[in-house]
Length: 633
Image (cartoon, rainbow, N blue to C red):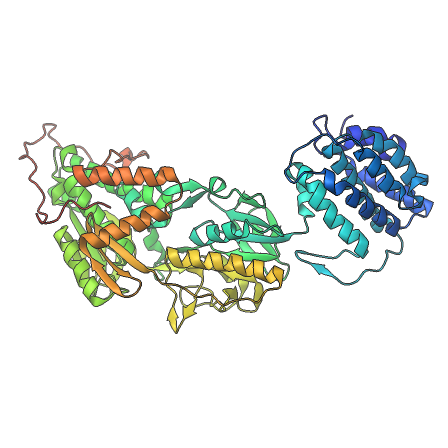
């Protein structure tokens, strides 16, 4: 039967309708004229005078009789002997349903019921007829004002609601994996939409994945989860992009969770919809975990020449700029311009800036010297600028000083109290000084994702939402804000914007939604500070463990490495990173990941007049302390 054939088989040939219209030959639901068929039956029942309560009672009786025959797992099995007779008895037990339109339908469809798929199809069809009969009735039966979790009660009698819920729980075991999107939209479960699959969003989805009364939609503009703390190692050609990322769909396997590749544009709290590129997504609860973006302190023009480090694209772009600078220096005939190409400036001495500066300086002295003939990459200049009086200002002063000393041992020039006033394609200006460079990297400021502005709630100076103790937006109990977009406080101190805090927030929000649906008391969020670490170079790190113990040097680096390995997603990523770190620890060189994937030839300077490479002395060993092993990221 063609799906577009305009004929109501439910009114003329019910058996053929059930067999050919509702089910495919494989026993799976089929889209087409099912809604018209059930609507036709409802009109006939209305003309006959059958009340919706009668169909609701029939559905209730059929669900009770069919429940023990449908398995819990979604598979199609043959019905045992006597099952059809029990269903037929349940059909007849509700009174006048054995005559008239329902009697005709009973006589037509019961012979077709031979397995759990056709049994589920029959239940689904009767439920559809009941729903359509309510819609076509002139005076719908009154119903109590009940709001089920996730949607409004649609004026449906209590018996019909109970039957419909039981029917979905039973028939859905076989039908749910194959239902079209139209049926999923009518799902009565509480719908949670999570925007962002970072550390917080992923933990919220995993926590809610164990809830049977919830369905979860994870929305992200990328299809992968990213381990941001190791992005700088992609930017400095230590790791591959795939080593620190994993497809979101391969991480979230719960049956109640789906992943949608889309870019969120705004939120309409009044209508309870998330507006995405090309459509809208209704929600019952919304979790915003969209993270942070770069902040250039009212100088957006700096973004073009000083890229930040937040995404894989940023990391690959920075890697390309660094490697291109050395390629350009190799071609450059002017010593002044060559020096400019080999000067690198990182703005901001927070964890990102410190880690990037240390890794870049190490690469110039260990990974690159043997690759070039006209230049000595060990002469590259790496400058770290910080506007505050010390690096890593969030750490105790003792650790900040240790970090500065380690950076200087790795040949990084550290300039504190240097407020940048200008950046262009020729260099960086701060105070009365100007550094000529073609490669600038930004790690100074971050701002919350602009999506939260559409909530129209109080924000702090960084654009973060001032959340309640339960991590909800002010005045919006169904909107949760976590991670870098949440300005949460505990004991008068701000909760740090780091991965462990975001993960704890995600788990707390997932538990809060489950407790709210179960009617349990709701708890305030409590952040458990396990510590934070910043790596300076291979074997050099500083850290604060449980806010008590201060660590530095190789012990701090070993703890940092272990924690990062544990938090990586997937065994393959953990194994790959461990093997790579072990290899670079002993070889001091690393793997060959120094790739320029874009076409940068047009940006290259003119070739030097001489094509004969000047003789260079053999590379001398780097000046590193003999008491320390070669550090590893």
